[in-house]
Image 1 (tube, helix red, strand yellow):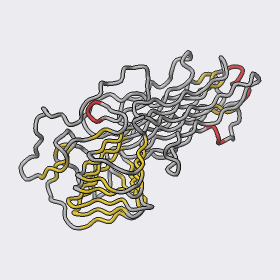
Image 2 (image 1 turned 90 degrees about the vertical axis):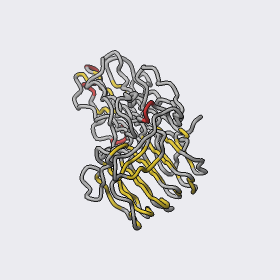
Image 3 (image 1 turned 60 degrees about the vertical axis):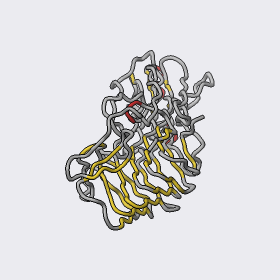
Image 4 (image 1 turned 135 degrees about the horizontal axis):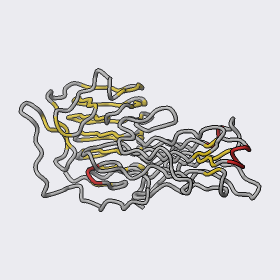
Amino acid sequence: MKLVLVGVIAVAFVAACGDNGEPTPAVVDASVDDAEPVSCEAGQTLFGSADGVFVCLALAPSGSLVLEAQEIDTDTDVRCVTPGKGQDGCALAAQTITVTGRVRAYGSRTLILIATDHLDVMQAAAIDVSSNETTWGASANQCRPWDPQMSAYQRAAEGGQLARATVDGVHGGCPGQPGYRYACTIDPEPPGGGGGAVLLIAPTVAIDGVVNASGAGGGAARGTSQSYFHGVCGAGGGGSGGMIVIDAHAIQGDGLLLATGGGGGGAINNADDPTGRGHEPDESMPLVAAVGGAGFMDPYMRVAAGGPGGMISNSVGGAGSGSGPQNYWGANGGGAGTITLSAAFSGVVAPSRE
């Protein structure tokens, strides 16, 4: 089965993140016709494509699984099955899987749903592995982090950096870069986390609801007039979008697949002002970039706002703005994530290819 890459393309299916000045990996054909055949150990069953993403399970899925509104910790949930070979993660398997509410997944491992007949995400339901201010999505930030503190000459923190293709498989996006700080009266908030990762495998997948693997907005730089005149306070970069992979003969429905980057944090001169934090992508407006955090205006009419999140395949997040030397700097938004599909889908897909 040939997989069609819709979002950012990264080597070995590792989710891509915002730019840090390094070259982007070459585009690769996910079909890999000359790749070695994949196989499972004796007594295990192979699920998925022979194109690089597959799962081996010891027990054949049976029965029906209905996922109502709930949370799934991919590290500790007792329902998780650990694949014997292939993609690592928390696998839930059944003959049919129906998602009827918002399923929020977090933890260090990728969420994997496998159905031998059909997998349906109903209207008004969602599979949510996105990251936000308080929680990282499943398998988010599985990449080399930024250095703890950037150079003072960089000032504007980057969005999530390019992931290293060191581990095969489906993994989430990268966090943004921490903002530079020197003599800040209040430490800047953390950068945004990268979006999580989810793998769906079934002969037929119907998406009438939402699958969300978007990145989180970057934290604000909040200071006082003292830090404005005597220090540098940079906001945190937005997290990159994560990764959604659907391996099916047919992908039906008119729902939403979302894996865009979070907005960069802004710099504000009021410790109690909540508007400086970058925004997460909005499911109700999926084709609009996540907004960067608000920034205050200095005496020279310069605004230290955060940049928007990445929206297009291979795109980095928008640039944040600064208000001159030795003061505040808004951060860049997170880069676009990756959506990989094995068949055409008539719903909304963001990031788009162009």
